[in-house]
Length: 78
Image (cartoon, rainbow, N blue to C red; front, side):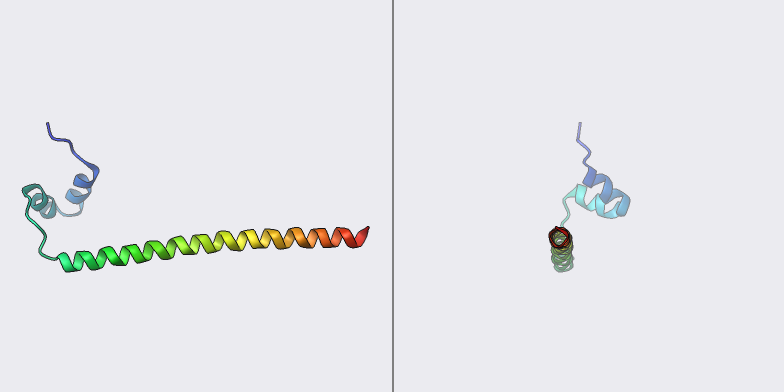
């Protein structure tokens, strides 16, 4: 009994013919386009990661600034 993988289901749902080709072991003829798409997705993933990291850094710096402001204001009251 052959195991059905999630990638097989995804390929079948996206394109029945692509699934059939893959099942038969027929290689794709548009390897350059696939490589370009993979590079594009890798670049996008890096940008998304950097955006999240910069957002986290911004929040940490904001909290640090608020803590310093609170410390300054309480030291002026005493």
